[in-house]
Every structure is written in C-alpha cells, then in structure tokens.
Length: 337
Image (cartoon, rainbow, N blue to C red; front, side, top):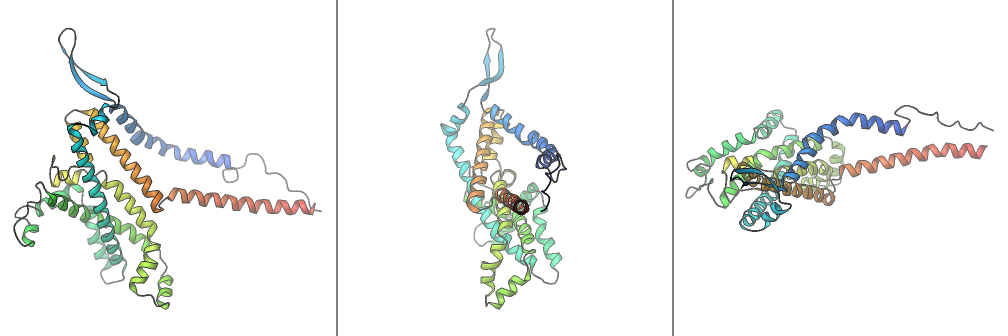
C-alpha cells in the first residue's frame, strides 16, 4: 500500500500558485495599463465630454460679451446628419471608405508581390530589400510633397502620360487617384515586410512535397504560401485598415484643404477644431473612433484574425491538459489504497 499524496503546501511561488501568478502578471502589466489610460482612455473620455458642449458667445445683463461652453447634449451629433453639414459629412465618409477599401486592397496585392521578390534567393537580395523598404521609411508629409512635385502640371506624371496634361491637385476623380498612388507607394512595403516575415518561417520541405505531388508555381502559391502567410497578412491588413481610416496628412498636403474630392473625416474634424468649434470637432472625432472600432471588430470576427481569442483558447486547452495530467496520478493512488 502506497502512502497518500500530500496536499500542496500553502502559498507557493508564482509558478505553482495561480493566485500569485495572476498578481505577478497584473503587477508587471500595471505600468502599461497606466500609460494606455493616460494616452487613450483619458483623451477619449475628454473628447466625448467635449462633444456634448458647444462654445457660445452671449450678452450678460450688463451688456458685456460672455464666452463659455454650453451643454447641448446630442445636438452636435444631430447636426452632423442634418442641415448643411450632412452632405459634407457623407462625402467625407465616402472618401474615407473609398481610400480604405481601394488603397488597402492595392497595397496588399503589391505588398505580397514585394515579399515574394524579397524572399526569392537571388543575387543582390539585400539591395532589393533596402530599395523596396525606402518608401515606408519616408515621412508621410515628405512623400506627399514629393508626389506633389510629380503631379504638377509640368511634372513627370504628365510627361509620361499621353494626351493633355492632367491637373492632379485640383477637384475631380483624378485627385483621388493621385492620393491612392501616393498612399500605395508608401504603405505597400509595410505589408511586404510583415508578409516576408511570414514567408521566412515556412519550411522548405513543404514546397518540396508540393513539387513531388506535381503542383506548379501557381498551385504552390495558392495552396501552400497564401494559407501559411495568412496570419501575418491579416495582421498587416488590419493595421493598414485602421491607419487609412484616420488618413489626414497625405491628402491634406498633396491636394489641399477643403477639397471635396479628397476630404476625409479626420480633415473635417481638424477644420472644425481650427475654427474653434471644439464641440462639433469632438463629435466628428468620436464618430470616427466608433467607425474605426466597428470596422476592426468586424474584421477580426469575420476574417478570423482573433489573435487574442486564439491565445485564450490555447491557454484554456493547456490548463485542461494539465488538470487532466494531475488528476490521473491521484486517481491511481486512490485505487491502490
């Protein structure tokens, strides 16, 4: 007869005690939570509060001008969808969505192509990688000025294109094309960099097995490469979607302000704030935040990029496995007794 197993000692270290493990994790993460609260939570709460007020000037009983903030509730939000500002808001909403859908799609396709080129074993691969990543390193305002020179009436773009010169930086659909070209040129290397990281962890044996099975280059890309780099590609696309939804500096510098063709929600909120209409500006910013949050949530749920959910599921499975492995010796000891 074997002796019964002794109960675990009270307390324990952070590895054996789940309570101490949780407290240690909370203590280590608390500085990050404090920083996030200061740079994200507090500005968000302040913006929501500001959107419920409106700065007004009125006369007091003595006839003096009094400036102050007046609580107006949801009037700033209602004004966005009604009256003269409604048309401008929906135009900015359409432009923001247009740049997001078309720009991210083009950047993703071009970024995957760049990653395949950088991953291919060829002579001078380091020079090719450096040249591809240069546009991503250029600041957005600088790249906008660069493309502004290219899209001038006598710029290189009109020299290369046949026919009459196109006034790229004026009102019209060509202004959207100019913004898309400049945005894709700058951001496609970012997608390519993340996809390249996913390509480098794919074992070569997988491609060798595909070749043995008779798969050609297109089948290997569609059936092997693309599924294996999907996690990295989804993360890159998610980051690009959230970034383009907040696009401001590129169209503002390249095309200009108050251009109906390229005006976005961020540009609209900036103009309201610059004109000291902080309540409507905060309302625009809050709506933009909700738009970004909804798109990110839908993206994560529909496209399977729920990295946090997958990590939680793996953690739960690991805990169940450990609990099962711990319970089996106890059951054997009970049977032997």
